[in-house]
Length: 225
View 1: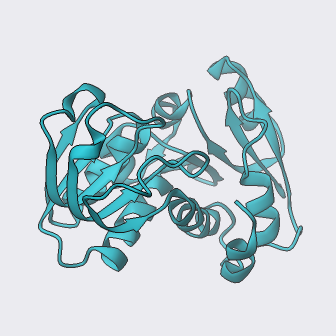
View 2: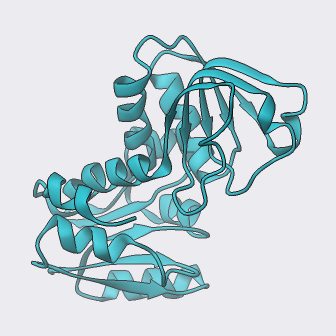
C-alpha cells in the first residue's frame, strides 16, 4: 500500500499533492478521493490500496467517528484530518492541532491569554491546542468582533473578513487562511504568522504520521504557496 490521497468535496485544487510530492521526492503516489458522500469516500479508502489519507471539509467529523482509534486531540475535538491504516484498524489524527501547538511554542511562548476567532474545524483544533499549551482561551464567532478583541494571542480561522476585525489587539496573530489572508495589515497586531506557515507545519507533522518517514522539510518550504 504505497498510495496516499486527500478525501474531500471539493478536493481538486488543493496544494496537498504538491506538498506531499515535495516531501518525499515523488516516491509515493498522491491523488484525490473527491466525493461528496462520506460513505462512498470511506469505501474507496478502506477497499483501495491506500496507506493513509488526508481529510478535508466536509468530512472531518465523519472521519473521526469512523476510525477504530482516535488520538487524544481527535477525541477532544471530534474531527480528524488524517486517517492511517494499521494492523489494529484505522487510526485518526488531527494535524491542525499539532501545527497550532507548534506555532504557539515558536511564536508566542510567553502568551497567557488567547482568543480563537471562528469555530469550524480549524477553530476547534486551534482552541484545543491553545488550551493544551496552558493558555486561558475563549472563542469569538464571526458576529462577535465588533466589541473588540484583546489577548496575547489571536488565532484567526475564518475564511473571510468579518466586521470588527480591525478592532483586534494582540501581541501575536496566527491566521489559518493561506489563499486569501485577511489579517496581514491589521494595525493592532504586533507579530503576524500567516497561513502558509500553518500549512507547512501541518504538512511536516502530518506526513510523518501518514508515512512513518520524516519528510524533507526544506523541499516543503520551497513549494510555492
